[in-house]
Amino acid sequence: MNSPMNPHHHRQASEGSGYDDPIRIRAVRPAEFALLQDIERAAGRCFFDIGMPEIAQDEPLPLEAFARYLSADMAWAATDPADVPVAYLIADLVDGNLHIEQVSVHPRSARRRVGRRLIDHLADQATATGIPALTLTTFTDVPWNAPYYTRCGFVTLNDNDLTPGLRAVRRREAAHGLDRWPRVCMRRNL
Image (tube, rainbow, N blue to C red):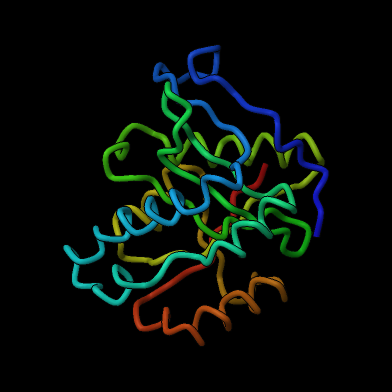
């Protein structure tokens, strides 16, 4: 589904965004899809350390999936001063909200608020187009998952609060085996 998002809009972190690091947010470029897969693999290795090797070994999105997100204006990269991606975020429109499908930060850029910048950029895009909230699903007990998203302004939804689209997302995740570990849906009102 095409979105009214402007994929060419970006925010220079050092220009009044409240961040002092020159990370830039921009649309993903097709030539970067393989690099995004490498970022996802590198970010996933952290799951080995917490006893979730199946997640660490899960293959990243195929190149065609990145192409679909890009064609829907739903794929952003956080780039270093040389304009090389160090992180990315892809999103879907689910029940009228922007749903974060994946956000991955290369471990070399971790703990520098890069993921949060991507999330804040998505929130800005949503607000500019009248979308009322961001949603996501995540692992409950992984420190850089639900506890992190709580710090980013998300709240956990009760099962009764799940929209039909979020229920469908959870069913797909369960079919993929992700319910082996506790997961939740979260929402950030804008």
